[in-house]
Length: 554
Image (tube, rainbow, N blue to C red; front, side, top):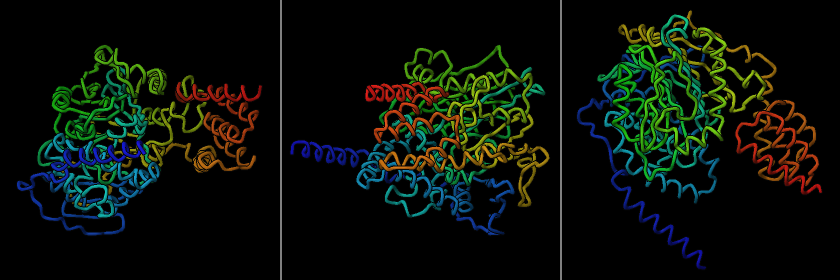
């Protein structure tokens, strides 16, 4: 009885806290009086081509959507929403269904919604007005299906902080990105080249409709970015001045409220900075609520730097005596040398391993060009070229990336990977051609003769087996969750589909452990420990199970 009283007291207190703290944010809307609020008219040319005045959306033959939009913030938002409305609504269904998979309980979902309303109570105070306005415009075309979560505009704001919130609250490894840059003696022509894998994974469906967006704002520089329906923040992009931004998550502590989402900060840099100094000045203005490395490349400076930000401090990591820069998911600047979380990240995660692998691959090449950069991004092996098993997060190519991207800032060239992951054709875009003249026709923007061919791995039996493995891996997860029984043939097939991946032996060991078949569990745990395990905590977990099994067998 006492525990029930405490429980209801906590629920009541939380409800009071939420109602007191969220009323302003719940009813806030940006001031739209200075903008053109007329709804755009969209002409459907075909199922894959849509036009609205000078603006357009089309799907190219590689499966990438290409969006072109210009205007003031509200015009950009409304036009983006109108052109992508069906994609936007589909994307939100995919995202929120994933949340439902994580939290099936209706009551827990309600608690989460209330918590997020409270946690995001100051979000609108930390998003610049121009981006609030753009989000508002896009949100006018989102579905009413999820109004129980939050009204359309507030929901749009929340989604721009989704990466940050998940990162801050659970330290989720949703983004385990790898990026590098080379210039001067390390690049083929001496000009800066950058490349990155954006390893943000919700599920395969989430990455189906990725967008190469080309935006020409009334204020700031025209720019391109790779995004998804409903997302106006920048995770990978380059502007018409040849300035690039990419983000890599680092270890974070949990703040008490949302601040500026990283993707909004990088969007501001992308739209309003033309060199490294201006990018740093913008970053100094904003308070963030997660730790992140922002790689900034600049044609004007012919180099790249890292702006390392956390809720409490910021550092700029420069490499004045080098012509290459590497970034994974830990900080490298002096300000974070003694940071406990950053030290834990280096020791316990796969960040340092991928960092060393990039260094190793770059050392094997005297000069970097776009084709070599694509080979590095697509590399699936570990240090000294050992086999990691497909899908291992120690690999640069974890076979889950939302996209890979390569920049040549001085030439204003960018290559974006088509699906799946970074394995499809790298489609080349020339910003000189896209923004340098009036747009008069709706056809793909790609500069086809500069495209990089798809990865030959796509045509191999190994890739077909990996696709089958993903299906079987979900099945064995369900078996373990529900304590079901599977056949020896299932186990044999499951392990044969990805034989170098430690996970197939670990999960099989768990299965036999549940079934009290301890000798079989022991053999599988031992086999897992002979392979390249992703993190120290994963390895320690297997070692603990092995000790338990050995005690059972005595």
